[in-house]
Image (cartoon, rainbow, N blue to C red):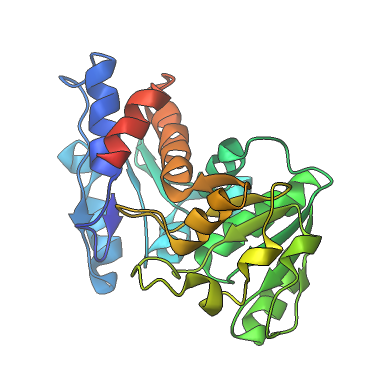
Length: 262
């Protein structure tokens, strides 16, 4: 895993647990490498000679990872970011498992659903791309309306006006792609322009931020009877997709989930 900063990453624990469970720990290992932006290309270029077969990539390098790759999957190219690199015979291949990982974490297909995506950054790009491709009707809200409009135009969604309160009751699927909730201030709903009364049993709420405790959004959604998919589940599904590509083996999801939450 390459990022900056990177010490907080759960990915080494997730993959290591999967290697051990499958008896692959003698052949495979996974580590976190902190790489500042100015050193990314050089450091990635060194990895194959050090025995690495690939790397996951997180902020702020997902755009740079796509740019340096020799080839890119359709998802990576269309999303405009790569969170995974594979090294083979002197070439670098870019992929994006953020989108399929997000879809795999959902309880049902989003086809035909009306979805509200909060945020317009890198995580939102993958989510919006995946939902639009699966046939959902997607609307985007962001505190900076221009960013939401630009993302909507690029990926075939619609943008919402910056309003005092968002009409979340009108949507079946609500996805928080912002960083709101990471600092556990307890004001998540207000910062997201949501109210508890607008969330109910008919909602699926996906909350990408994850930590030792639920965010206010996830906690409120559970209390209101909504189906909640937290950031740990999405992280595990993204990691599982990378694991399959590199090893050719299906990873043990329950083992990965337990490792993530530890």
